[in-house]
Figure (cartoon, helix red, strand yellow):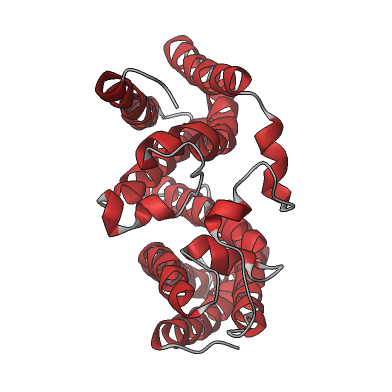
Length: 315
């Protein structure tokens, strides 16, 4: 197991989150099973106070979880300096069988926690709190995924062997690699760009038609397609190297930390797109989603345009 100050900080915070999360989970189950807004009993009054406590705990976990996710990526990048063969966070992720699953689960949990916060905000707007049972039942599901994430993170850091040779991002994200992600390299550039821009145009279309469920579904698909397009095509223009497909390196100082802006825009755009499918009052969510998805597409497209104007050729 590799133990650096950063890893220890993450594991300690995970233990604290798990403890607080357990408290919120127990309260959530009690509220879900016994909540009755029309009751004037002492038990209902107690549940109302407990719901406030549980909501505060959940908001606290999420408020720390977002910067902790960024710190997690930073930690992986720093660990890469002590692993033979690793050049960035990609090598650390690939060093264990759990790495890729952990990254995916962390992203899913970020979306789920953010959806819970939105559901909670909608609930407290109404004095009758119509979504109270739903939001705490929803958290019970999120809690299990969160505990799986905590366990998986512990297992991943425990499985890292410092003296073992690992792969660099150049070999992991290449068409000749044996990793699971290598299969996406069989997708042609024309087909990939058609999917990417076609998906974006569908988002624009459903924005104007106000087809909320289709808008949400296309945003969900855009998360996957946009990341694949970033790895296979647009990332090479950020690096200005046709063979460099790493989704982590442009988070570093050499590329002005542009990756945080890119992933941030994608998260905000697609999250508010998903919100549209869950809540009817969504005019602002429509606009935020389209704005940030558009900024994501424009920024990545500009890298291609600028490279072509500078060099007169495409990669």
